View (spheres, one colour):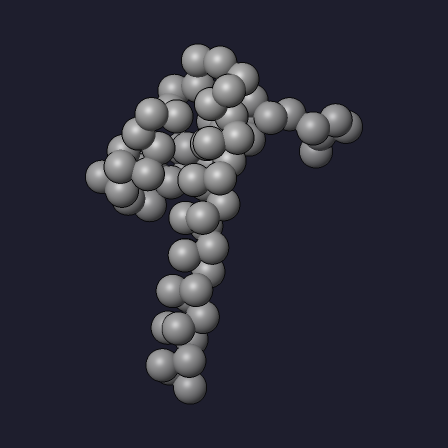
Length: 68
């Protein structure tokens, strides 16, 4: 889709998806790093997004095990 990486699109799309998933948790997780005002906030945002995404994966794995 993209010929080059687009970090700005990543930040906006992931924030939008997290907001749909859980608005209150999104506000808590990204407090202080959203909206992005400078480059120094970007690593903090990526770290928070990666951590939360990993939690979602673990929850999904746990729920799959329960069904089996």
